[in-house]
Structure formats: structure tokens, C-alpha cells
Length: 353
Image (cartoon, rainbow, N blue to C red; front, side, top):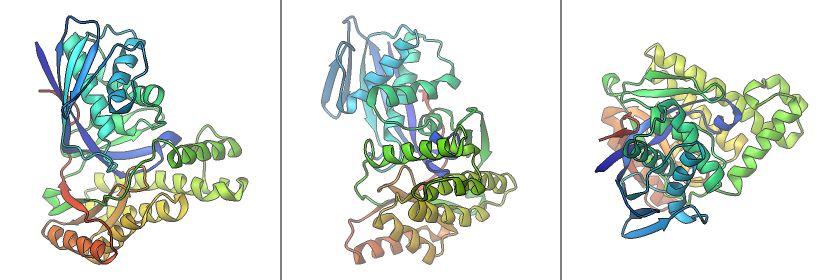
């Protein structure tokens, strides 16, 4: 018996570096997705094949490289007490890698969905994001929050996912761009994008230090008045998280009221905060944001962990070509590599085909 499961990449509409601070995020799933086909094997091991490369493993030794995301899911399911069947897995994906669109979470969630179906494992859907996150945190070694795995698992077509990263409560927020004559243009800056170690880890540690200095469990509990309690080098980092959480709440309020265009200034303010306070942008994404705004976007911001990756621009549907063309011209004028653009429509989370 073969089982095929898919899980999408995601963009985060707003709420960056708030997830590991027990804050709020608002991602939506992309139509780009990872497909995993699984079949049971009589051999006492697992295999995973992608792009003509096959990796065999049995968890007796640590798996490294891209296959670690797959082995991590097997490991975490077994650690949670599930009898994971030995299987051969085949992976295909059109989620761009290294673009900040959560290709790793898409892989984890597709593997988890396929193995749960193949083995008849009673893994509650609400528990799956936490399992996939633990695979990435404890096995792969990436200290990510729970947003990416939640989005890849729980998102619904036509909606953004409002996630409280402390309680893990979720709410599906209607996000009908087409009905409003709007489009979400995603521009992959194609700038180098890598933060498994280094900068991302440093930001997370600094946020935890700031929360401890203030005397709260996480920066989700802090206020702007608390900034006076911090060492100067921690102030801008904490200020970003505090103000970004509020921007998520304000964005949700606008969307619930049907004021989709009004989220534009919040997106732009989010980017300014990431650029000036959290310092995670690079020239390519800054130029993309500035150019999109000059070309008529209602708002624009970098999405993802930073240091490269993609920019979101909220534009009128008939202005997509104009804005995308302006960004291409700006990149050429600055000597950057050509960007890649597409229009993102909120899609469905992980499921079995």
C-alpha cells in the first residue's frame, strides 16, 4: 500500500520573531507544497529519496543533511510512543528552498502526515505541529518556534491562521484577496538565506535575556514601559517583539472587519521594525520593499526569519505586473541577482491525497 501526503510552505503575513517569545503570528499556507509518498518495507530501516539521492537510516546513528528532517520526524514519533512503520519514502517539492518559505516545515509535516496514515497512527492533528517542531529543535538542531509547523499543518484555504504561540489556540481569519480585487505578490530576493545557526540563535537568546531582565516569562508579557529596565543593547530587540505582537492583533482586527487594504501600513511598519530594531533585513529585501511601495503597494514587508528570503507586497490585482517589473528594474540597477515573483493565494494545510 502506498500513501501520498502533501504539506505546504507558508508565508507569514505578519508577526516575525514573536513565536518563540510566546507571542502572536498570522501565517497563511502557499499553493507550493511538498509531496511524500510512503510504502511499508520488510526491512528494519527507513529510506528517503529526493532528486535521485537516497538516504537509508535506522536511528542507530544521527542523520545529517536534508534527510535529518525526515529522520527527526521518525525519531520524535517513536519518542512519543508511536509504532512508526518501517518505510520507503519519496519526496518531491516545489516549495523554494532557502527563501524563507518554510520548505523544512513542509517536509516535516508531509512526512508526519504520510507516516501517520501509513501506520494507522492516532496522532491528533492538534499535536502534530508540536511534534514536527520538536523534530526540528531537538533532532535537527534549529531553535525555531512553532509557527511554521502550525501553518503547514493547520492552515485552511482562503484564510490566514491566527496563532497564539503560548496557548496554541488558533483561529481561521478570512483572507479573501481576490474578492477585494487585491493580490499578495511574493518576491524572492534570492539573497543568501541561512540562519540555522548564528544570527537567528543570537536573536532568540537576546529575547530570552530581555524577558528575564524584565522579570516576565516571555516578551509577550512585556510592555513598552518595561524597556527602561533593559540594558541598551536589548532595547531595540525587545521593542520589535512588543510592537510586532500588537501589529498582529491590529491586522486580525482589520481583516475581521473586512478592511483588507488597511493592513498595508502595518506590514510596512513591521518591515521598518525588522530593519531598524531587530536588524535582520538585507539590502535586497529593503530595496524590494521600498520599490514596491513607490510602485503603489498598500504595504510591503520581509517575511520569514530574515537575512534574505522573500518580501510580501499587498497590491491591487491589476498592478501585479507593474510592481513586479519595478522590483526587477531596481534589482538590476543595484547589481543584485534577478528576483523571482509569484502571487500567493491562501491554500490548504497538510492532508492525505
